[in-house]
Image (cartoon, rainbow, N blue to C red; front, top):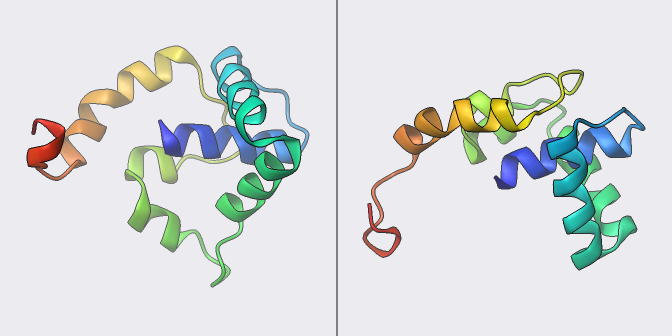
Length: 97
């Protein structure tokens, strides 16, 4: 969900029209952190320091990180990704896995 939220924040920062799920995610983050922080997070997500998106895919599941910013995120997209994301998540005793 963090990657999905940052993806949505990047789209919001670019002024793109957000899908319903994206709007809810970014609205919630804005309520917690403020508009400026959400915009900055979106900029950082879309523009890694080395000029490529390679760093993003090392931090987040590829199914989310490799998605073009031109593609919005719907609730159905997120639900469809969950099995893949869960499979990519390392076993974590504290997480019940």
